[in-house]
Length: 372
Image (cartoon, rainbow, N blue to C red; front, side, top):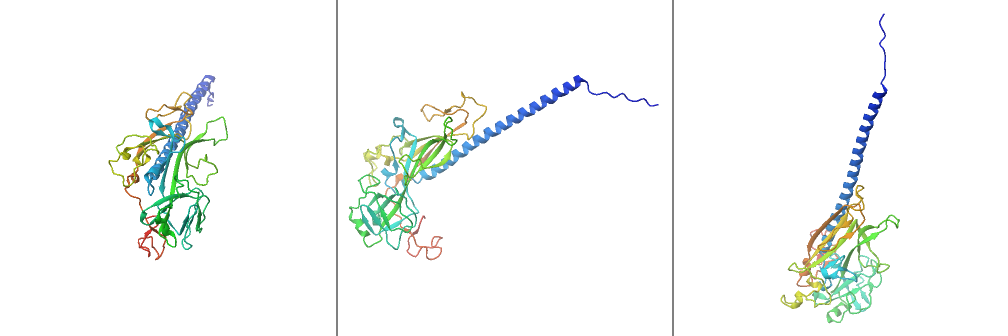
C-alpha cells in the first residue's frame, strides 16, 4: 500500500511573519502613493499660480504699450487718492492709465456745454456707458478738449448728454476755440473715445467663511457707470497677491509723478526745465512687479514656512497666509506713446462700400478703415 503523505499547514510564526511583510509592503506603497499625490497637487498649484502670473503680465504689457495713445501725455496716467503705497520710494500698488480707442470715431454736428449732437446720418455705432470720457477734436487737430457722459448712450443715438464742465480733466468742456464752430452744419469735428484701465489687487471672500483669509484677485475697472466710487470692477486674474508699480524717466531713473509740477507740451524744447520735472508727462517706462501664489496650499508646510510675500526692492515683506508657494516677477515696459511730438489725428472710415472695403480695398471716401 502507498503511504499517505502527511499534510501540514502554516505555522503561527510563518503566518505572523507573512502578515508583517504584507503590512510593511502595503504601508510603503501607501506612503509612496500619498507622497506622490501631495507632490502632484503641490506642483499643480504652483503651475496654476505661474499660469496666472503669465496671463497677468501679458495683459498688462499689452495694455500698457498703448498708454498715452491719442491723449495728452500729462493726462495719460492717473493718480487717485491712495494710489501710492510708499510715495517716498516711488512704489504704487495701483496702476491707472488712459488711451484712445483706435477702433472708434464719430462726427459732431453741434456742440453745447452739456451736450453733443451727431449727424442723423451717422449715429452711434456702439453703446457708450455713463462716465465714458470722450475727446472732441477740431479739424486737423488744431485744438481738442475732453468731456464725460452724464448718461448712457445707446446704439443709434445722436444726442449725447455731458457732465457740466468744471475746467478740470476729464470735464474740461472747453469749446471756446473758434475751430469748434465748424461743427455747425458740417462733419469736420471728430469725436474719439478714451479708455481707462484701473488695476488693483483686492481680497475676496469666495468661500463665504469669514474666519478664513480672502482669496486675492487682480481687478480692472474702467470708471463706467459703477454703482459707487468704491466699485472694484471685474476680476481678471486670480491668486495675484501683490502689484507694485515704479515709474521711470527717459534716463532710467525712478521718480514719483506729481501732476502739480510743470507739464511739457508737444512742442516744448528738449532743454526746457519742464522736461525734467516730476509731471506724469515725463513717464517713459513703467516697472511692474507681481507676486502670484500657488492656487492650492502645500499641505507639507506649517505656519512658520512660506508665510511672507517677497519684498520689492527694499520694501519690507508682507505677512500672508501660510502654505502657499509664491513666485515673484518684475519687468519694465517702454511707453512709446509718451514720446509723441504731436497729437495723432486719424480719420477712420465708417464706409463699407465697395464690398471688402476693409480687406485691402480703399473705401470709397478715401479714409482709413476703422481700427487700422
